[in-house]
Length: 367
Ligand code: CP3
Image 1 (cartoon, rainbow, N blue to C red):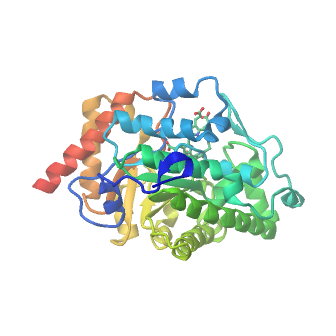
Image 2 (cartoon, rainbow, N blue to C red):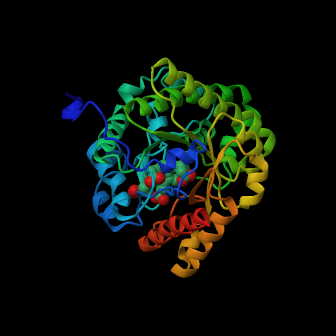
Image 3 (cartoon, helix red, strand yellow):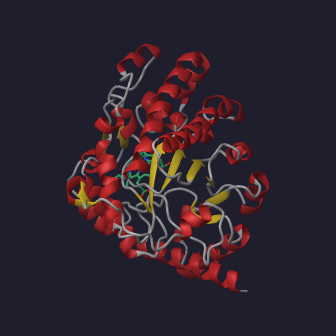
């Protein structure tokens, strides 16, 4: 039986379920590993595919997204793929213009200046109409993966997206966006709520399209203190977990593991461990031991090697990977970097890291 664009109606059978098992807290033979930004500029084949093309046009092209997603999987023994896209496609779907300026990063020519600007946003976003290209990329990629590893879908979290929509790009302080929290708390909550609604539909749509796990990136958690995090970030992260699960049940879809990654947010780890996500992602600024103490036995932890450890000579890198695996333990653990890999990193060093995680965890399990 064939459906959408000549693709079979059923997805290929999954051959490596270590990542999904670890996310659910089940024992695995080895610790699964993947890497944030694994489809990225550190790979020469990525640079070649991206060359001369606009970033967001690439995101809108399912064939190219699929190709870029598969590149690191073809090179390394990674245990999960993450769909090539960007968190800023959500503000675009809400009606904002975003361009990728080479050397500068994402830029919004007309950021939100004050609460009156909220009227510029679409009140209701039909994610199938405005983000259908991501769903098509996911479906195509899930087929082309041929069951080798599971496919992760993702979204930015409301607070992180709000910072971009107000700052208009990257910012060292996020002070314009934080100004809203102090001067316009009510409008801030309105914006965060609308973002939450779109994100929920978007994530449910990704699972319907074939995503087998979901990660929510709260990359700008660290500029909030504990009080503001509990008021402006955590409630929306919780709401996303609850409503996505409900949305999946309502649509007759199976639940998938959800990962929350709040960068520099370890002041909130206890709360994050109880926020409805199966996996909590960690940056490198917390020790595995302290993270386990804070989060208890009910969630899987993901992380957290300093990305710069990839600059080490390979032998040292393998030792560091081994120390990390021993410190986290081989149960309820998914190895990753503490943030995305940088463009100037040696691809073979990622391969060495992946292999070291597998080797060390197998030998710990065998002992
Ligand atoms: O992890 C993956 O391999 C999947 C793809 C992915 C991208 N962006 C591709 C991308 C994911 C998960 C993201 C998420 C994303 N995008 C985040 C959250 C994660 C994090 O890093 O905290 C954020 C904050 C963004 C916004 C964004 N997009 C930034 C800050 C940049 C870098 C700009 C620059 O030039 O350095 C991007 C661009 C981007 N997104 C690239 C990639 C591979 C590089 C640009 C390119 O390919 O030309």
